[in-house]
Image (cartoon, rainbow, N blue to C red):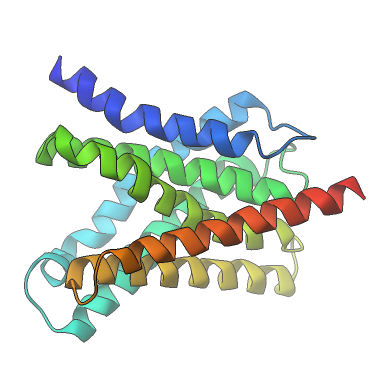
Length: 221
């Protein structure tokens, strides 16, 4: 019974966020099956991301220098998780015919990120108690979606098979990883009030929401 409760508290909020972002694509809905596959791929991405972080756990959890902790937060957590999430989008959706316009980059990247967050939330709720689920369902889940959405925006607008396209994808990955890393660094170091972490999430979400509106208007024209 406990597992069912923890599972519901972890996965259902992620699915609710998927529905929220899915509805933003008003004119050319993505196939539900492809969305489900991408969500599952995002969940699977937790495993390699965790393996990347394993050798550096002491830098993240134990008292260490601020420089070491920031590098771990950016290079290990931020870059590692965002790279795995983006790879899951590539494997699950990017090469599929349904991925046929710039807005799809955001929709699929957000979906994969929400799958990643759902499984990560499950681990946290199981190990630290159901009490952590509400905050992670709102803040952490939206953070993953927003950071992933930034990388997805650049993936969507990148010309395929060109050096320019590769450059745009790498730029998006770097920005997403940096935002993710700064967010985690602020939470872990406790140098500033947690509200600053919330501000990063909010501003990143606003950026992604603005790009969704921009790409939607461009399509209508």
